Image (cartoon, rainbow, N blue to C red; front, side, top):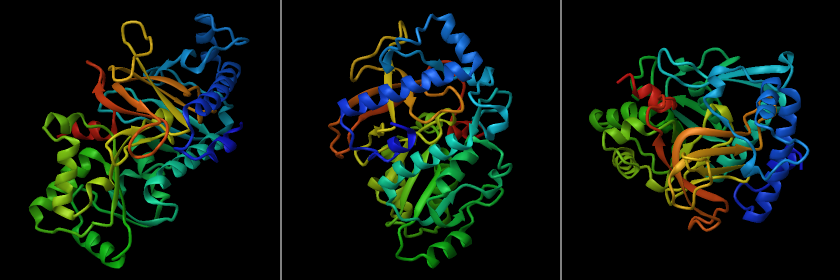
Length: 361
């Protein structure tokens, strides 16, 4: 199957055996593609003795540590075909990942994101309240992870309103006018977790302004490190937002994703589980030997994606810890693995958009 045929599949209806077969074919194809077109990737595969004539199952294909994209410029297409360079979030002094996209990969990322997110907000574009400042959108050719997240999700908005001004202060009048204009409509809200808490919830809690967002759907992400440290659990987060603006807890969805695999997002269902779509998979590995962990066992998170063609980011070992909770049997009805993220490994850099921003406070 080519990438267009894959992305035409239902994001959450592919049972285990069919999904494994599809991922096996696609990930082996991508491994060969990057071997042929990325000299650095080929050198690494040769160094570990990968036999490209007899590739193993995809859960045994070599992964790249995600940190490698901070150290090397890895590209599997001619430099003349690069249309966008994305960078990861990072605190001052940290190196950032640089991800090179050609037109085909960028289009596949956008289509994948559309297929996944439409399962949670519907197929129709709706008014969008962006819980951030327009100042973060600058150079359209050099996207930060935060800017890329905003622009990527913005395609779901028919009309858009930024909730914060350039000083990250809640623009109450703009929000009030926007919601009045779209009264009775579903509102799509997007933001990064710490910013939603710091600049939206806490301002509403003290300002005396309580907008009616009971019809809204919020998708947020970027890391929980700072909030968990402040004893704000996902349950507390959802209940607090419900108190100040009426948004239903089941319509608040965390998501897990990274700039190194943009478009491949893992969205939280109403049961509180992160889900791998038909276009990706999650493997948990034991840190002592990188063997595959059992269901429920904590380990390092490996993510695989069908999307990356212009750079070798199809199989990545992250610096996060997590657990697989089950597969094909979540009460929400979605097929595929569902899992939880436990946090960063000890001594790993802060890198999520939310956590990076929170480190300033």
